[in-house]
Image (cartoon, rainbow, N blue to C red):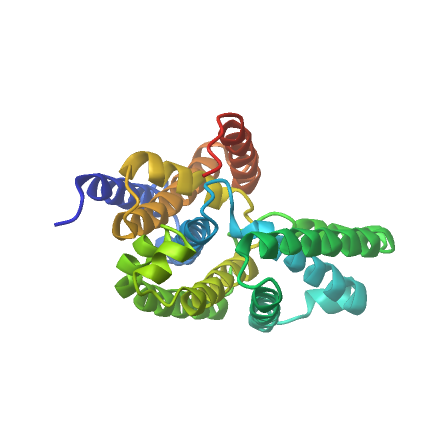
Length: 314
């Protein structure tokens, strides 16, 4: 039987979804419902992907303040956006098909991450902490290249790049959304039967290997899974750096367990709830006077400092 706390989070998410879809619904009802349903699906996909990826990454790193974005996914996404605008110009960039751009960005990020993980894990003798350090350095390099390219742009081109720096849930391409949902469902189907093995991996490499887990190979598979989740969600709507840290911390505080059969769905549901409820507030109450991603980044950044100050590193 599902945990009561998960049920309550699920009920809250359903209520938030209903508010998002039906609050203030008037005029061309079916047209508005179609737009809202597409936006809602994007919010759910991104929330579930980021929440799941963050819990997995913290399990592998044995660190409660780590998120996949520390490996430079967001920096690579912004570098891709900047490179496309710089190479094609503002007019050429605007004419790019949305689905084609999504596939290109997601494929490049996944390929770069898989190549990085495979190469670094071999070079560092499966030392994940050293691999993370190298990832941070590579992310800084990507940001430096992005900043250099942006300084060479004219103002109109820089404005287009600036729009990609924050997650945008409006105008999501239907084909990209469908592809994201398929990838997400496939990953969740592969991941769920392995939740008990993840509990063992959380004990550490030596202990997991002593209990018969093929730790190194499974670690590489999960890192590739994390790369796919983060790449697809980032390519779909843009970067959300601190959302994962926020929802993973809430999931640990709510469930108070190390069992991934509870942590993974809790993080996914809480992330979806935060995005849906937050977007409802900004759309219906604040009338789009601000951006949800900005508030999430601020709240997540403050939580990071609090966790660091309290010593919640592991």
